[in-house]
Length: 206
Image 1: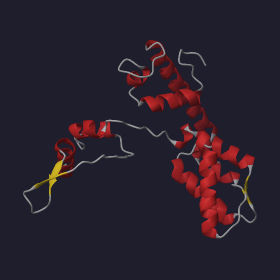
Image 2: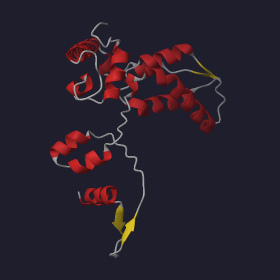
Image 3: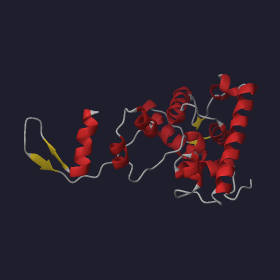
Image 4: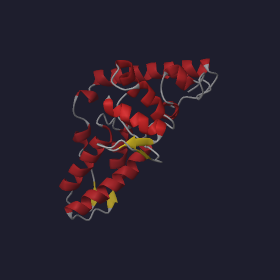
């Protein structure tokens, strides 16, 4: 909390004092901060200062999870394959279309780190110039059981209902204090991504 107070002073007054000095030093900076924590929840819990949160939250950029941006997976796979092939001294020139489809259809509970690990493992085990992933790597665990899939389907249906209700109430408006994003309590970019991924029309029709 003491560090948060010191940072808040730098942002508000644009000055700080060196350790052991009483002379303020003026600064002119642009601060870019990133976190995977739920800061509003941390503010509510009293572990993050509300005034610092609002001082930092000037131009928020929400980065959706990998499962919400499957269209990025081919580019990420190409990058990771090139990187790990170079490290392993291998010449991998092709990435199978079926492999990309597998990776795009997977739910990625471990997000991009899981994708990175899967690609690295496949590169290490690759014995020719075509990159491929063992299908069993993407089918293990309870996430692939029928009961789990039914649960995920039910959650998706419920999510669609909530989004459609919020859009109907806001008359298709996403942004602003009376927009659907505000009603749902989520960042507007996250809502736009969900609408696109779930195939929802802004005016309530799929």
